[in-house]
Amino acid sequence: MSTADPNARDIFAITGLPPEVLAVGMAKYSRSAASIKETLAELTEEKSAEFHEKWVLGYGDASVADMAVVALACENVSMLASKAIEDHRLASYQEKSTRYQSFERKPAADGSVPPRRYFRPVPVMASAHARAFTETCEKMFDAYVDLSQTMVEYYRQTYPKPDDVTDKMYAAKLKARSLDIARYLLPTATLTNLGWISSARGLRRAIFKMKQHDLDEVRTIARELEAAATNPAHNPHAQEIEALLTAADPAARPFAEGIKAKLNLQYKGAPTLIKYTDPTPYKKDLRRRMHQVAATVLGDLHILADEPRVTFHEASHPEIDLATTLLYDATNFSFGQIRRVVEDLPVMARADIIAAGTADRGQFDVVGRPYEVGGLIFDTLMDYGAFRDLQRHRMCTQLNQPLTSLHGFEEPPESMGMELAGGLDIFETIIQKAGGLYRAMEIDLPHEASYVLPMATRKRTLFIMNPRELTHMVELRSKSGGHMSYREVVRDMLEQVRTVYPHLVQHIRLAPIDFQADFYKR
Image 1 (cartoon, rainbow, N blue to C red):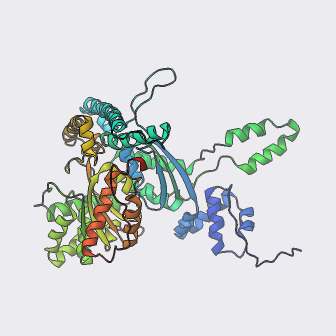
Image 2 (cartoon, rainbow, N blue to C red):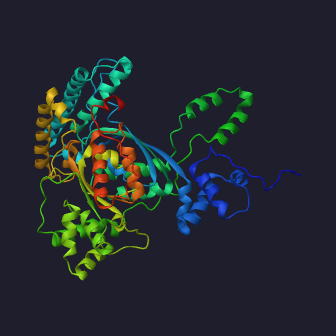
Image 3 (cartoon, rainbow, N blue to C red):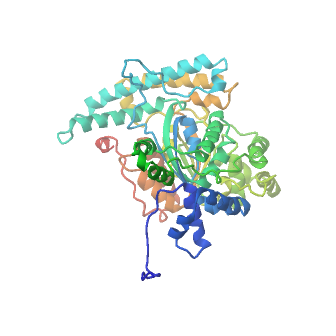
């Protein structure tokens, strides 16, 4: 008889289980008086699947799927697709850095030169634009290499190595700063890698959303994610352990086989949880419906020239803001332009816009981000590279308009140095070439044309946040280690709020932005 105190505290970590078995063990805490150690000892993958079929699929208890965590790797996806992959809140991502990793191709061990790493969309390669697309992307990578090398030499002459900095560290600083400039010329077709850790519930929602994307690449990735999460996962130790067990003495073979069965080296991700990911009629028709409404309501608007990178808007009447955000998603106009039109509409006309946002909504369809109205509203127009960094603040409400050349291109904040170094001609030449091809392609391929746009392209995104998230974003992204582009964006956010609500943001610590003083801090 055990003498252990049944009320003694016991806190411990758990490992070595398939995600779905662990999810069931956690879920049974609310349905059993037993310890999780007892529960897990009795569970198998088959029993876990039965549990999920009953509670998750039968009774709709989706919170169980939060307990199954799946780790994924997405390799050789375009930067354009990576932003669609990462547009989900309940997950953690790590993507290949444009600062610490050069996208210049390196010769193989045998001296051969590999092809440039950029995505070649099937619709583009099957079109009359195929040759122009590949030629332009090649020139963009050539310009990327030329500009990075030009800036390294310029910085070497402008910022001599301090005595307390090692040669290796100095070279790394020069490279990082030059890549900060050169990245503006990378096409969004550039291939990247990213790691993704998510609950099965979050992954299911992500796949559901990605299957409705305009780009075929993203829809294809969604199907591949579904397969990856439901088939045996990569286990880096599997082959090594398999070899050790296979080499066991013949007399010990039954013992080795028992160990191998218990180890279960080929766990599946979450096969019974990643279900019901196909688009519903509501989600498929919503975008088309809102485009039609926007064309009717906003037909007289046009894109404004020379708009600021950040425009702060105070929250207005909730119904006005909701109708505005619903239309924002379906246009390329600024939040302010749209809201002024909506404010002048009759009450019932605004009601019709809101009604269009939920027409044909099924039992399991959830409303989208436009319904997260209220808070501090920032309409941003920043270069795509800065957007890629600030998108990581996924606790904000983010409404993304599609990438287009309509808003022009952003020069790097350090453009004066780029001009002195002789790199401005490289920059302007490739920007003009990419912009010209985009305009030619968008007539035939309105979605795939975005692959040729460089990261210097200005992109419009609406950020809605509370003061806590503003504090986090400003204090983190204004630090000297950050890219100058997004440091200036968050500074503008803070200063615009300060002019209206000085006491609301008096606690926020903004790091001073000084390019020269910060050169060795990044």
